[in-house]
Image (tube, rainbow, N blue to C red):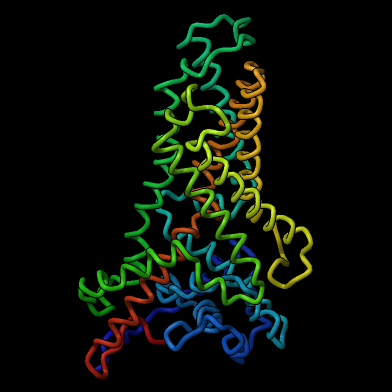
Length: 388
């Protein structure tokens, strides 16, 4: 007796909903399967992009929302190169990831940002203006400087511990917001009464998959653009290193007696900045050239995060250099600019923008490994998950 094979209802509005998040060509696709055969990441359990396209075309909202395959896709572009109808399945899968991100996001804010450029840019601008207002309020009312005193250089000691609390807030807020979505991803893809229960022990046995994929991004090595993996990996490593420094060692890194550039305690920061510069530079240069399928159809939304990350790193380095040079007031201005740029990146881009795939993709690979392991352990004839 098969388990998990239940009738599903077709939703005629699904295709229209998906297209609100980007280009999605179903007219050109006639389900020949060439895209699936050309992809080195496809397996018997993860059959894409053909199956995802089929779900959308038939209006199967629940199976599509429960699909992990759009995240297992690493945007390599082999499918679009092989497609005899030039239906650009790579771009369609990108659109599906944006659509699914909005389904996981429970506040509704993510959907607005992913559908509307005005909402996206407006949210970034609002966060930046809010930070400017906080800076002015802090100096005028909390510190008690007169308006003319805003041109006076001050030491870093006046910012602590408030700056530490502010930094922890703007970093932990998006992290906790993303963490709340993990349950929604699980509920869409693994939970539900129409799916057989998977023993908790299977989740434990496959937990290493999440850690391994989060650290290595190994699936990206299968993409034809070999240098792409190194750039993305170094950028992600640099971001994680910098976030770790800011969360656990911000006060330590701003202490004057270890501020000398040659101090080994500062090398972690330099190394993280170098990784970010290399990774962001590699991404932006290749997207500007756009001479390969993998970099076609680049939109403003695709480069906002790497550009903000680059500006954050540059402004931070600028404040660093100016402080070494003894230009205290210029260093304070540069640091203010650094905070004004970094805050929107953290509170808008991290939880709602393209950065969220750093959480969803390893999670999808982990859940897929759990499904495959459960299928191996299931009695003969018992199906795991949706069958369409």
